[in-house]
Length: 528
Ligand code: ACM
Image (cartoon, rainbow, N blue to C red):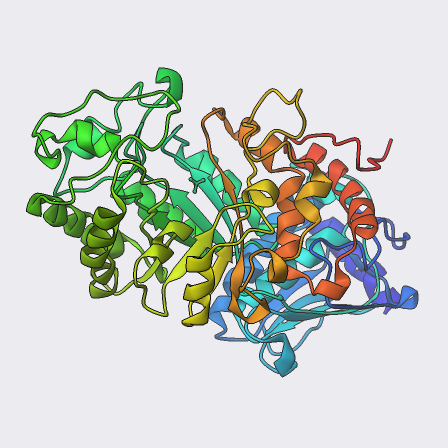
């Protein structure tokens, strides 16, 4: 095999012409097989089986396996900039050259739909999975097994060694999510795409977009155009900063970009509270027929749709119908949190009318955990956002009735909390939250009455009151997002703070090279 590697190198140097990037034939790997985040289920290193990606390496998928081909194209896009290698993606039954093979089927049943097997031998790398999402997860693992320089945007002259051995891996929970608030501050399509790329590295497979709140309305609704013309205009961010909204074309583009990274976008339209942007855009939505002024402060709990007015339900149905039509994924999130300006009786009346509309338009209801005050179908997903260790009888009752609960305990998973009292960005009400705080909890005991089988997964929300740019987003997300990703993916037995902080340290250089802004937590032994 060594002979072929060297021959391949010679061939590809000729192919590469001017760039002349020939890698050394051998070199020890920088990463160890067990360095991966989230921690894989089984890792069996074999130091005699290291593989070198070289200028002749190809990426192979089976003929006609479209989903695998798409993952192969993605992998080539990840590996080409730093290696400078051509890395053709070929549909072929056999591997001839040194090959990274992405194989659909023939994988162990226990890895399920989202898991993968990764085998590294001297001949090549084989990732096997039962679905494209499993192959994609395996590709993210492969990326972390390469030297940190793989994240650089231009060619680097070095050996691209993958440590030999085998990984078998699958998630503990099917739903691993992050939420981004576009309402308190609007984030552009390129910023959201960049965040999707950040999430994909850590096997996060849902991006929940908080699309409407008191300050701004951020998604085009054709039947109620003033929502965006007024509620999404300039100056509608907190403190009058920024503004803007996603058109339907933008939203379709984001869905496509996310799908290519095996992520599902979950849209949220918060109601009946958190609705000042809608109420100030349309006077007729208000009980007294008078539009309140726009608000760009950070108060919560003062707005409510008019529960007694029929027009409210025409509005809500139009919005749900249009948002459902824009949404390829299964979930539609109706918010429902902090409805302090709605009486309890009105809240239940409102939800009784509105909840069936989500099913009517073919979607599965999600909502913040307050929706569990209402009678929910078993398919509904309450999202718990109180502190870990919390007690909520309604949530426990929903779990008892068959609902799966999504866990976002604010004191653990809220990425907008400050790291410490000196952190410039972020809020404090559930924090401060250092990396270890984000790591030290278990999803199966975060809420009384919600055990392992009632947990849909975990989600890390990032509210954007203090956030303006992608640099701000990344500073708050890294390194806590990988901690939450490990809570959602890794087996309980594979989770260990000491191991996590050591593995995390190796990601600092990757973020430096990839231009990812992050908090250099003193809890992590960063290199150099
Ligand atoms: C929330 O933080 N109000 C869901």
